[in-house]
Length: 102
Image 1 (tube, rainbow, N blue to C red):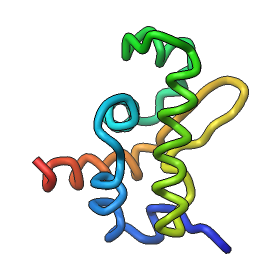
Image 2: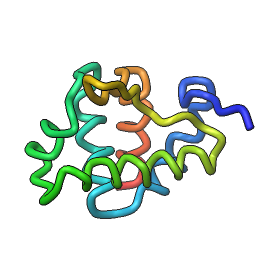
Image 3: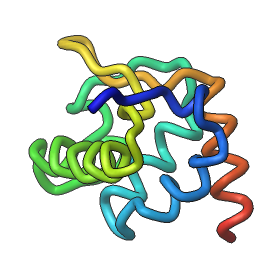
């Protein structure tokens, strides 16, 4: 199944944000939204979010990725050996979705 960027399907931002589980997945998503265009390693995210273990970042990212895939979307960030980065365009869409959900 072909996945698309949230930029291509902006109306799904609210649904994706709502599917992010409370707790660590939501914390990670909120942190990436609040720090657009900033590449951060899993270690930096773990420290910033005060997650007990390094694997908690990966598990939270996996959970959000699964929610995105269920909607036919790509993960809302880029991921590489040097860290995670949420583009500002996607962060803006999700920030509006977060505001609508509040």
